[in-house]
Amino acid sequence: MKKTGPKSPTRRTPSRVREGDCLDLLRKVASDSIPLAFADPPFNIGYAYDTYNDRRTSNDYLEWSKQWMSEIHRILRPDGTFWLAIGDEYAAELKVIATRELGFTCRSWVVWYYTFGVNCQQKFNRSHAHLFHFVCNPKAFTFNADAIRVPSARELVYGDRRANPKGRLPDDTWILRPQDLPGGFTTDEDTWYFPRVCGTFKERSGWHGCQMPEQLLGRVIRSSSDPGDLVIDPFAGSGTTLAVAKKLNRSYLGFELSSDYVVQIRKRLASIATGQSLDGSPEPLKSVPATSQGKRLRKPTQNRPSTS
Image (cartoon, rainbow, N blue to C red; front, top):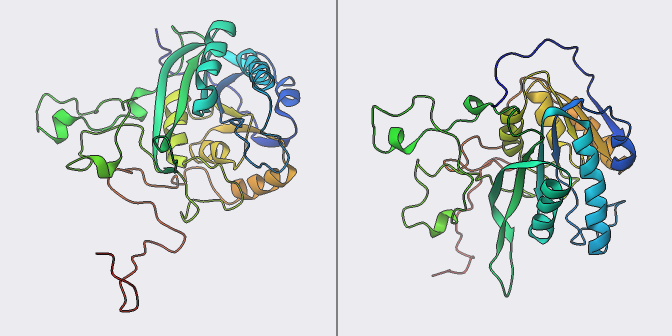
């Protein structure tokens, strides 16, 4: 059975960001105390972080991943949830470690499709990442379905009176690029589709290269925690998990190795308030994210060569 009904009132945990190695800091967190953990760790693909070496050997990276995920399992409440964002290179291995070695149950293997993917030369262009939805106890965990429902095709496309007025849960399926669909996206194509936060987007922090969309974190946090819950992110990075948690009236605990990133995260958190709307488009299939200068359309000039 999924955990339902109101929880007993508890004292709210103060929100904070701490600088240091996530393994050292996770070991200081009390066991069975955290409702929700979200982790977007380094992918071990050679990204140029300012303090972290993203070129470990495969064995070293997998052993390190097992260590910090083991700590996540320890600190989660018995009804706790762990979301892991990871790239292709180690997705399968980390899922096996989490489920077969650490005892997590995988509820969903979500594919996050995004626009502005990596341009490749001799393979299909990469435009996705993996999101694993793990729980400690498959019979008792938080899943707020009504907080993330979307309109169903029966309601929007067919106008069927039998449609559930609450809508339906989003899909976890692969989708094509919008321009590859003959008729474009329609109202029944509800999936995990969020544009990647590109450099020109207004949402972009400007100081961290791996920034996740607030709307994506909003879906994770709304579905897997309740207002007042504590959300932990052991790789705070650009601070998006913490920012979304604050906006959605959750407490947060973030760990970050880089002292420069910690300074920027604290500035970002100080600039927002609980109840503030999430950045990015809530309906990404219907609208385009704003840039730092609004929505711009350059008109052709006489000096610009023809593209026909």
